[in-house]
Amino acid sequence: MCDEGLMLDLAARVGWRGHGLVEPNPMVGAVIARDGVVLGVGHHRRFGGLHAEREALADCRRRGLDARGATVYCTLEPCRHTGKQPPCTEALLEAGIARVVYACPDPGEASGGGARVLREAGIETRLSVASAAASGLAAPFVHRVRTGLPWVIAKWAQTIDGRIATRTGESQWISGARSRERVHRLRGRVDAVLAGIGTVLADDPMLNARGLRSVRRVARRVVIDGDLDIPLDSRLVMTAREVPTTVICARELLHVRLTEEKRQRLAVAGVEVLGVLGGAATAGWLDLASALRLLVERHDVTSVLVESGPGLLGSLMEADLVQEMVVYVAPLLLGDELARSAATGRVAASLSSGVRFQLLRNRRVGDDVELVYRRHGGWTTGAEG
Ligand code: AOF
Ligand code: ZN
Image (tube, helix red, strand yellow):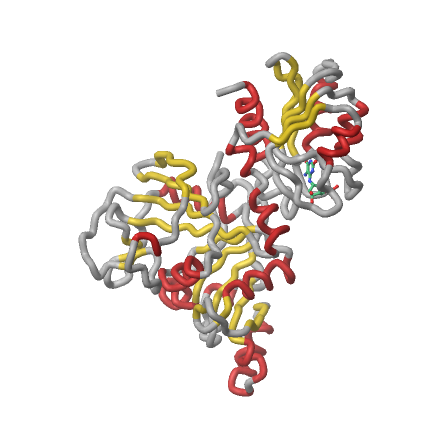
């Protein structure tokens, strides 16, 4: 691979360190190099903190190196606005940088357009597609800015023959301990964990991150529950004071006397009850795009981990609301056509009616294989590192 690709790959790896700490900002990494020698690296460490470019310049200074005449490789177009931080374009100009290579345009209205500012100031500035890792690092941020929807990661564990539970619903445990550890880590980095009422009734899950040294953010637990069936003595409801919990039901139920007492008791337990309308892409008669958009508007949610059963996942797929999938394949085979598969409810008579994803990464995790797919290219944000 060319130097440019390697430098951007490095910038992506460095930028990834901000996962779960910088959102709703993008993860960003930057590398400063001259003649193939790295002078400094930096990344956006936390929301509101220094931007990657200034971190990398500070890294050069710490090492006693002058960045004058060097090239900056950054995963995102340097910003030109003053937000919580001053513009990166200014810092690059002041430092006497000669060239800027960036892997993804900044879609922000105020922040975007830094490349033009740099060019006009005489800095050779170029968009590069040499590193898929770098180009895809800010994909969740870009997706949200463009669509108003969160980045949705579906996760499940399956047998070799693609089943997530036996015909009686037994699913604990298909994947091994190490895979499950990685899922907990991911739960500790996303803004919300989403499940359907079916999963809640069947498994009474906690849906929180456990067994970690540090949790980067506490994910809101969200249940898609059209008819407001969630039991008051479920573990989710009982722990709603400790972990933020939202139940999304049909909007009509918010005005029906029949459910008034239930809603009140849920509120007393600390559960937020939101209503959305029915729609084309429905689960429990709810419009899922509206439900996801509501999470962005209400709670600034940027990433959602879906840990649902096959029905809800099939509906999300049908509405093309899933951007990434993290799949654990365990060395187990059931061979039973009544065993449950990951997604159902779609009609896919031909292969062309399937939903196609790109494989981004595969790795062995204990005795399992972890596969990360993305809907539209780019790089994984689901389980890297
Ligand atoms: C960069 N480098 O490392 C990041 C950028 O409020 P602020 O000042 O932190 O600005 C946030 C916006 O700046 C964010 O929405 C995105 O457009 C851009 N993020 N830009 O040049 C960075 N994190
Ligand atoms: Zn910036």
